[in-house]
Length: 208
Image 1 (cartoon, rainbow, N blue to C red):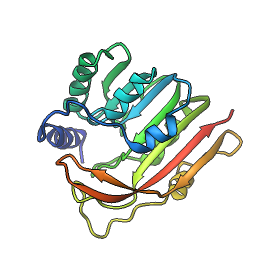
Image 2: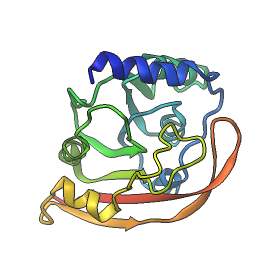
Image 3: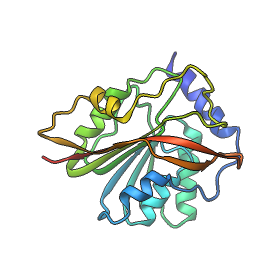
Image 4: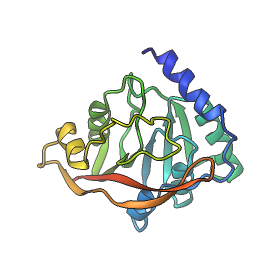
């Protein structure tokens, strides 16, 4: 499918619901990043912007990218309204075609799933190479299907964190897997419903 199809789909997803006034950060982000010294962060697939705003509030300089112009425009406005406009840079980016330039101390990819063409292993490999020494790549994937998910395919299989790491194909001389597990939590969807979900969490640190 074309980039135009993907943009239309994701713009429709975000335009089809009210703009979030106070989006919350993902739990796996806050538990991972709290206590780390702030630096430069890249948020891949920023969505409503809860992660980017939280990071900026913790002192990080954040580049937030998404394929949806609706998402990035809403986030830019939110950042300004929260007094964080100088800490959050939003960019509409199709990760299927290009990866943001620069070096980062933290790169997060939360639920970077799409029904359109996206070579995730290549994207995540590019992310790992964009880390500065000591930097971390946090990949949080769905390990179960939430009731509000756009993908309700009963036959879908979610790769384990170790399988995702193997697909990236990083040499252990340069990158270390610090975490690869599948914790559960109670999540709240965009419509306010709650459900128990499983996260697949992969944390990689660049050591050299």
